[in-house]
Structures are given as C-alpha cells and as structure tokens.
Length: 422
Image (cartoon, rainbow, N blue to C red):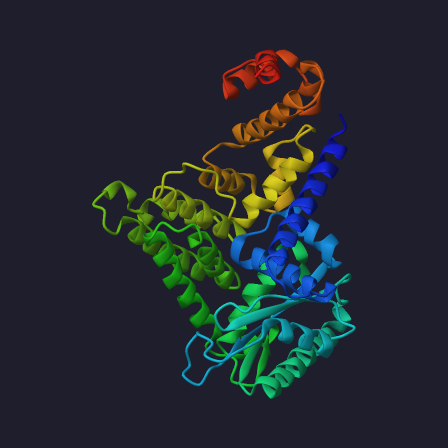
C-alpha cells in the first residue's frame, strides 16, 4: 500500500466528514441557502477552529483547498464599542447580512471572515507572496487603507463605533501570530481608529504594558495549571530580546522566580522553589539567544511539576507542528535533531518541550506514531508483517515486532489474527 494514497484517503475522509456535517446542519432549517451563504458558515468554522479550538495542519490544508485561501496572509481584528463599554453586544447584528456587506466592500480581495465572538470578529486577508523589503511601507499602507475603509463602512451601517488592529503577514500555518499582533493593537486604538502592529513601538506604554500583562497572565496560568502559561512566557522572552545580556539576566531571574512562586501557591513543597543563586555561574557564561533558550528550559522544568502529564497535549503550536512533521516523515530515518531544526529551536529545548506536552521522550513518541500506523495497515490490508515493518520506518522486522508487542501487548502476527477473526 502506498503511504501517499493513505494520506489522500485521509484527506478525502476529512472533506467528506466536513461536508456531511455541514449538510446535516443546513438540513435542519427550512431556509433556502445560496452557495455564498454556505461559504459564510465554512469561513466562520475555519476562523473559529484556527483561533479558538486549535486546527491541525491537515485541517488547515483542507480548508485552504475548500476556500481557495492562499499561502500567506494577515489578520484585521475589529472590536465593537457598545455605549456601556462591555464586551457584550447589546444591539442586533445579522451576521449573514454583515458577511455579504463585507464581501461586497472588499470585492476583489481574498478574504475569509470569522464569526462574532463577544464583541470582536476578524478577517483573514490572504496573498501568495511576501511584500519585497523595499515595498513594506506600501504594503502596510494598503492594509491600513483596507482596515480603515471597512471600519468606516461598518460604523455607518450599524451606527456603532469600532476599533481595529492589524497584524503582520505570516504563513497561513502560523497565522495565529498575526491574530495576537492584531489583538495587541486593539488596546491602543481609539474609537474609529485602526492601528498596525508596526506602529506599536511609537506608543510609549507598549513595552511595559505588554510585558506586565504577559507576566500577570503567565503567573495566573501557572497557578491554575493552564497550558497557555508557556505562550505568555514566550511573549515575555520576545519582549526582552532586544535588551543587553545583563538586563536579560535580570529579567530572566525575575520571571523564573515569579513562575516558581506561582507554581507553589497553595503548596508547601519547598523542592519546587527556584534557587537562582545556584545558576549564577551558568547565567554568566551564556550570551544572547543562549540566555533565552536556557530560560525556556528552566521554565519548563518549573511548570512541568505543576501538572502531571496524563494525556498528549497538542495545544502548543511547536508540538503540533512537530507532530505534523512526524506524520509526514515517519517512514524515513528521522532524528530529534531533524525535527528540532524543522521547528527552528535547539534540540535540547525541543526535547524538554515534547516531554512536557506529550509525557514521552522523542523516541517513544515516534515509536508510538509508527506503531499506530502499523496497526491501521495490519488491520485493513493484506500486507505482510515485513512489508508493514518497512512501510512505517523500521529496517529490522524482529526489532519492529518487539516494539509492537511492547506497545500493544501482542506481536504483529497475533494482532492480525485477533482482528481477522473477531
């Protein structure tokens, strides 16, 4: 069996399941829907999956094919500003009518429109090529023009003030970064105003506000055992990136002490305490990006004690990207260093990251994936054990059988018999 054909079948199955579910939902209503109406539901589903549920790379590719989304894009995030200044929309908005209105206003531009969540909604503008360095200012000006034009048009239509934030252009597979950039802009925008993330540096409060906000959210997430603590810590490390090494060291010590304190709240376990004095020599020997990587490793050690890993958590985007890479290359000879290079982090940091989020070391994680693929092939084909062994990336059938039995409790031959005569 050709693994590429297996991937094609998986994609076909994903498409079929998606359309079947959509058809069932639409069948519940007596309203007549046009193809554009149906596309509005698909677009909202896609955007919701991206930013609120966590879409896999396979899902993103499926939606890209369905909606004709291009490889690159940026996010414009809009926020309604009700008179009572709450995050609850207390006026009626017909989302389908609004969808058609926006599509008409931005006709000729590749747009994907998300749902209204609380008092916000976002639009993905997609393209196929990065703007040349010499044309960055024009690209930014164009994106600002689109955001302001649409903001004014919507305000005139519903008579409610809006604000907007615009993120940078990114690959569709990492477009969540553009969403967070746009979200950062919202807190600086006045009613009727749009701000681009490139303009945030002009706001004197930007550095301290974002760092302090991320610090507060990081501590809260660590204290409540939430996985997004890592994302807030990443924001903090990104913000101290431009500082000199001495300032970096001070900020890193401060942030790790706070993370340790948050992890110990409600607990008297002194072994969890981060003793920064024992790390002074190491800190002084590191420079630049080495300091940031060391900080991430220490943070994972601290927060790894907060919650025992019982299930694999793919919410972290780096772990999710690594999973997708393994699924595409598990038939090949592959090492931890190969995957670390693909996700663009050091092997040491990557090793700690996957241990925290999967509860497994790299070899066990790859073995689990290969054995699961082998189970599918053994149960649903007439392939021999030796053929399956080679197809899932092992070179020695005897070694493959030992790994399979260790993971499943049966040899491959026993597994075939069990699934054949059940």
